[in-house]
Amino acid sequence: MGEAYDIIAALMRYVFLLLLLYFVVTLIIRSVSEYRYLKQAQRILQLSIRYIEILSPERYKGIIFRLSEKNTLGTAEDADIRLFRSMLKPHHARIDLQKGEYRFSTKKKRHCEINGQPVIRKWTALADRDTVWVEDVCFVCRKNKTEVEEDV
Image (tube, rainbow, N blue to C red; front, side, top):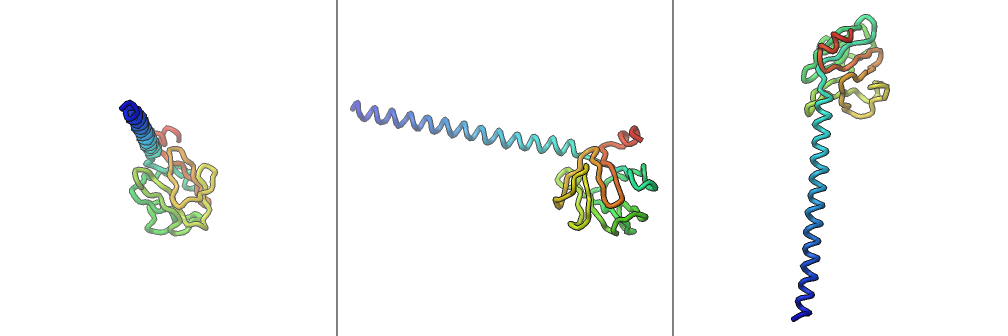
């Protein structure tokens, strides 16, 4: 009787330790997941831009464009951000609202830089005060139009 009791007691200790380990691991996984969601939400809040201000070429300097859900940058008549006297292609690049943030995209062979770094991903998120170079065009991203007016 005493031997059976010892075996059951040892078994129950291991079951208890396994359950405790399971709950700790589950808690850690949920915490990491929630932390990622929180960081993603904070990033989306920081990335919420609404305007771009043209810095270069000189003839367009200071022009402010309000971003809509889908924006085409180029020289075409139907481009949302039209800079017809520039080195841009008719539909050179796009700035689209995706999952709560504006993302920049261009074709692979077209050289673009965001904050001095070449764009290597298909879609790159834009944040407030990001500086974007596309051919001879440079613009800065803004959250609020009041910031644009204060900086000018």
